[in-house]
Amino acid sequence: MTKKVDEIFKEKQHSSNITPPAKEPGKVSRIAKKYSDKIKKEKNRERGFQEYIGKTKKETDYRDADNPLTPFEKVKAWFQNIFNYFKIHKSPSQKAPIKVNPKHLLIILGAICVALIILSSISDTVAKPFKAVASIVVTPAQKGVNTVGYWIFDKIELLSDLKDVYDENKELKDQIAQLTADNVSLRQKEAVLNRLRKLLDLKDQYVNYETIAAEIVAKDSSDWFATFTISKGSNDGIAKDMNVVAEGGLVGIVIDVGPNYSTVRSIIDDDNSVSGMFEKSNDLCFVSGNITLMKQNLIEFHDVSVSVNISLNEAIITSNVSSKYLPGLLIGYVNDFQLDGSELTQSGHVVPAVDFTNLNEVLVITQLKETSD
Image (tube, rainbow, N blue to C red; front, side, top):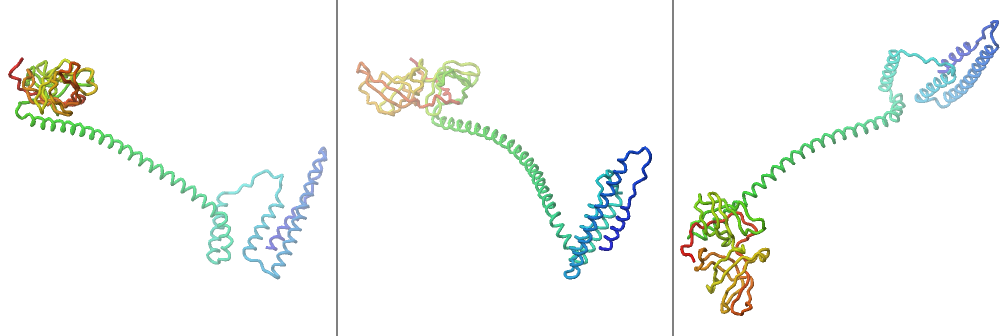
C-alpha cells in the first residue's frame, strides 16, 4: 500500500512541474498570473498530500511494529487513501463530466461482487466487515421495503375482501328482498286461511241454515262497516232481506242485490233496528244503531219493561217475533243499562259480537224469514 502511495506521489510531483507558456506579444499579463496561481495551488496540494503520506506511514509503521492492522482496518485504510487522493487532486475548475463506459462499469462491479463472494466463502474475517456494512445499510432498507410491500399487499387484500363483501352483501340484500316478499305473501295467505277456517267454524255454528261465503269488496267512507258491498249476487242465489253473519254473530241484512254483488246494511247503522231478546229471561227489546255511539263500538237497546231483570254482559239474540231476522242469532252483550225518565222502561248499551272495524269475509244465510210484519 505504501509503495503505491509513493508512486502516486512521484507521478503527481512530476506532473506538477508545469512551466507557463511563453508570453506572446500582445497578450495581457493576466494569463501569466493565471498560470502562476495554478502552480501555487498544485504545490499546496502536493505539500498537504506529502504531510498526509508521512502521517500515514508513521501510523502504519507504528501499528505494524507493535500492533498489526486487522484485515478490516487495512481495507478501511486503503479506501481512505484512495478517497483522500481524489479529494486532494480534485480540480474545482474542471467542469467536463467523467465518461464511464457502462459495460466497463458493469464488469468492474461484477468482478468486485465475485471477489467479495469468494473472500466471504474463504474467510469469515474478510466477510465480517462487509456483513457489518450490509447489516447497517441493507437491513434497514430491506426492512423499509418489506414494510411498504406488506402495507401494499394488505391494502390490495383489503380491497379484494371489500369487493367480496360488497358482492356478498348485494346477494344477501336480494335474498332478503325475496324472502320479505315471500314472507308477506305467506302472511297474507295465512290470514286468508285463518279467516276461511273461522268462516268454516261459523258455518258449523249455523249448520241448520244454508249459507254462502262472500268477500267484502267495498264499504262506505267511515271506519265502521255501516253499509258495505259483497262479491256475491243474484247469480249466486243471494236475495234481498237475507241475514248476514260473521265470526261472533249477526252482521246485518241484505238491502240491495245485483247480478254479481249485493249491498248489506249492518246492525250498527242508525237506520237499522233489530227485534231482540235477553238470552236468560227471553224478555224482548229493540236494538238500534246510533251514529254517535259508533266510534265507541257500541249500539243501544231500549223499550225494556222495568220489571225485567237485566245483567251486565248478558247476551242479546234475535227474537222469534222479528219480521226479517232469523231467531237465535247473537247480536251482542249488555255493556250498561239504566232506568228511563218515565221510570216505566229501561235502556242501555250493547257491545256488538262482531268487530265492525275489521271485516273481510261474511256468510249469507240463504234462508228467508217465512213470516213478516
